[in-house]
Image (cartoon, rainbow over all chains, first blue to last red; front, side, top):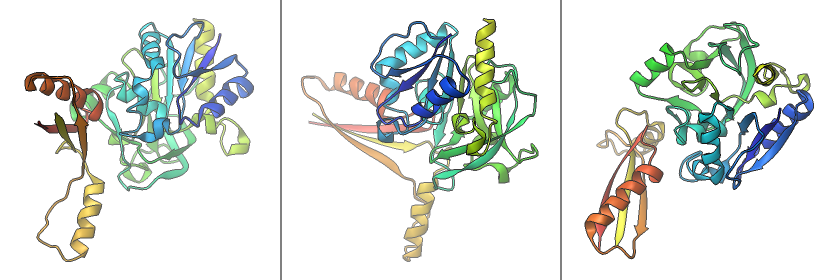
Length: 231
Length: 81
């Protein structure tokens, strides 16, 4: 198997994702420059965190038009795994590969801290190694993490179910106090209809080694890898 | 031709920046201002299109596809010769 990490001008989470996949989880990984317009020999693609195009216009608004995104869309349509982390999630929403939008945090502050998120759906390739309701400690670092969609879209996400992670307390309660940015229904991560595209605001690649304060993020990468093994 | 496009958050979307700006305006004593919402303004120079109707279609397309996120924003525009 091989996993690709896309690099846009301004991405800064690419090396961390590359390190976790290659050295911590130990699978073949390669960088994909954003001007590449076809993806070959890849089983999964990661859109990393950062500030692609300086967040000009809107976060992820310009990256969605990069040549690589046509290939990522086709890759997703064909069932390939796509993981969007932070800016990657923003790009997936701008590209229409996931519904909704990420707006400015309601407190108008850039938030950089560990949060807890509860696993709401373990029937995705990214969460199959987790238990329903399992709480993960993962850091966030964002100014635009406030997930928004209209009520009917949110109801449809709940029903399908496409809500994968929700901000929670350490013991798994969902309340406003545990919501760092005002995201609708405490949504921290969602998947598409087919379940092969996941977008999440927290950074699992920054929580895959105990020296960084949590290894919970590694479970997401390991789920992805074990899903790829059985395909 | 010149196209001026104004992009604003939809009314149903929370605008904390607008609220913060309103608070600042109020604190300076301008109590007549009851609400502030913040938006964006784009100026586009257009050449090589002769009729206004085609220019309008172009501007609407660009505004929809690039200048706004239709999930949370809407736009209005004017064309000037």
